[in-house]
Image (cartoon, rainbow, N blue to C red; front, side):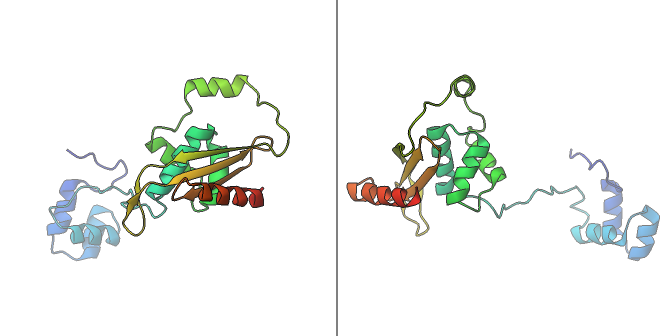
Length: 192
């Protein structure tokens, strides 16, 4: 049995009566103390559909692609950044993903909370002091994803982190060849 919406002015029995009635809309609205819009809504749905429907959107217009989801997850695992820091980094490369979208992705993938060991480590420890210009570079393998043209292929996330300022530069490449690495280094130098 479905639960009735807590502020519903009509019950399923009243809704069926409205749907079956041939009386004018205004008369029914006065009898049941509801608006004429409510009467029209239940007439349109018919006697078979007298339950409340979910108001949840069926399609999220801001949904991230599989590749964007993978990038967010790999970044979280690689850097261990908290949500706000991760959102700040991601928003530079994927501007349409806001904090809520990043949080939904992390939660869906089971990465919504940092592991307890990583939380303790972040609280008690301090970052080692590095000179300006010390850049950590890493290449992360993204899962095989379907591209816009329908092809499934493996892609790679190149990450450069300035250890002093914690500034991050990202790029997604199709391979991990030396030419791609050199191109990424040149991009990173221009970005920093």
